[in-house]
Length: 397
Image (cartoon, rainbow, N blue to C red; front, side, top):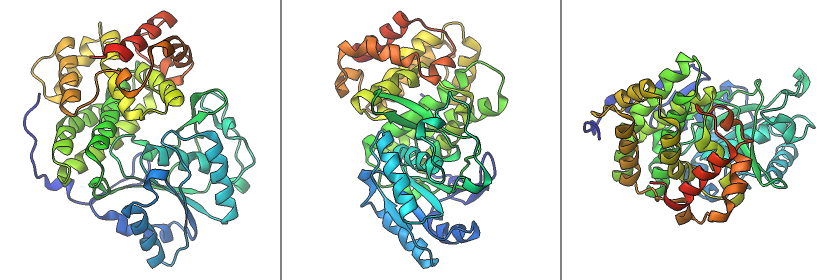
């Protein structure tokens, strides 16, 4: 598929600090810096937000130890589902206030990132969470009730959710996912320590890594002139296509883990430009069937590529070049993507993860209301989205 990657790359093992789009601290072992970094930010009593599955993992105890060594108090809130729901955010707000916390540290996978950011949006005001829905005018936030400081520490290389305020939350009554955000909420620090991903199971390494792959591809295909996002998407695609198969095959390869951590972060920044129908469909399937977001994206990806790519030969050529592929055709690109999904053992249909065929029409109707559908490079009718959903359920590749 591409040339063999270097097993050892010193650039992936050194510490780096980047200031775009928020302060980013990258490097193996940098979780140990969290205490003095909090002190430098004036944080004294952070609320640690993670998901239920991570509450007893080693990185949580290490984080609390480092905070304690710096003389900081902290409390753990772990009532976050794999697909966060609105009621959990309300409980998180109550925990923040009851503990008189002054900051939030979101640590874990995408659900922890989304949950932590959503709690941050509502922690210091009396607004409803859905007042921050992406399609609504952003609420006015005064200096008296400004957002608490936010630190993000991803422990998977997939969502790229660590540098922005956007978060996906399920509206329980509507059984739909919506994006919440505010332009004034920015992480004070994103800490990327690839050592935190070493214990990630192989299947989650594959699923979250495929999520990052989808981010890079969908963001690059979004129409419009945004060379910053396009450049990041292509570099992310280069890193991910190089290091994802290695990270899955060699879970203890810290170079591969580092390459994926950076690739995921860049892909996450790139989709400030927008996403597409892969995410629009995946969001609604996740809201109804509680499927893993990255896995759902990965299964749907080839179906939407076959729909979107005709007529986009120039963009395909640039993606092919980023992946160092020899076949520059649309079919060649899709074949390479499918081969990578096969290599990391992504299922070939949504039916294999419990999605029934009779939901296709309902999912399609919801997907067309998703903000990601609006930036898809090719407009789609209800019938077309339903057909894409049906194909993904029955035989995606």
